[in-house]
Amino acid sequence: MEEYETAGPATLVSRVVRQRRLVTELLDGRQPPRQRERLYGIAAKLSGLLGYMAVNLGKFSAAKAYCAEAFQLGDLVGDQDMQAWARGTESFCAYYMGDYRRAADLARDGQRYARTGPQAVCLAINGEARALAKLGDARGVDEAVSRAFRLSDRFEPVPGVSPCISFGLYSQARTASNAATAYVALRQPERVQEYADQAMPVFESSQSCWSQSLVRLDIATALVVAERPEPEQAGRLVTDALTISAERPITSVLSRSREFLSVASRWSKLPEIVEVAETLRAAERR
Image 1 (cartoon, rainbow, N blue to C red):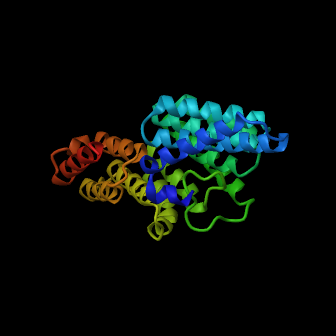
Image 2: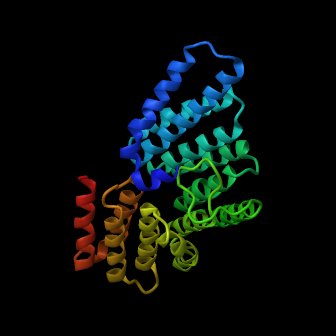
């Protein structure tokens, strides 16, 4: 899981595809029931990983197919945590497709399977809160954010930055960064800064270039929607964000950079914003 943060989906996807094919071949054999159940469980996780990678590569149709397969395999072996994780990734996919109502609905459905387990944190903060923010439901966001932190407090804290693709519990820093993202959409810059301040020091000491990029993008967008906008500083942050993850651009970084340019359009002639547009075009060509 940790390797994903440094290698990225484009590098790892072919390896995971080979592993998934190998499991399919093994399932054509005759194994004792317990071994077959274990193989189906492995197949579910590999399909889930491929679904998540497909979202970050912008291949949404493939992502939906892999997630559906992961959910069905999880059902086959009675693994509700896997089903919850698959719903979370489906919600993640719907979010970046711009279908925010579906993203919220999938996240809520996933929480039926997660119950109060570790996956409920991700589903509440990454799925429900962010999607509701895009729908303008401030009260729903506040409730989902509070619930995510309450649930998180039930578990032993995850040190540092949990891998974004992990099947385990979100770290506090990742939970806080997702809260910041939700409040960006609600145009509440004070809340964005509150949660970004919790996440930034942890992200900066990690190897997660995407996390470092995304928190900068959230702060930058908050700066241009603030009562006293700071477009020059915001532009520098976005260029920095794109540069940090330039070798491994992913859907979330590119999408949020485009959103920033849309919000900052009235300053499009500023040198700092022009540089953002040029840096983004270079990243999109990779």
